[in-house]
Image (cartoon, rainbow, N blue to C red; front, side):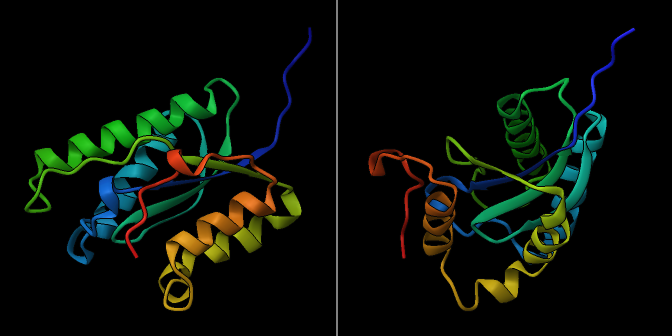
Length: 153
């Protein structure tokens, strides 16, 4: 009997609508735990997650039973509902449309995990806009600037 064997490492990046700084430190860790629960419940493996005030990075081992886009939708829609139902920010919370998803070789798993775990320090030196554009260039992703995240620097 044939089986399916995969090792797929994916980093997701998505932003808060209008890049508003709505993810507050007071609930950041709970949001990260909630996102981790979604990943586990969908039978993927969480490698790292960090929520900045205006965007989030999630690094996972993807189970091929679910598409990259479907998991992104689950992460964003379910976490938005959780944030709003718990009245965590003063304003209505919503993730911006779209997301980035980048794949990595297994040798880079510790490097990417460390990078995500240290987002706060990383963004003290580099803006989200610069970081995201660098990722698109590094992965040779063709993009139309009209459809990128709305950047307010």
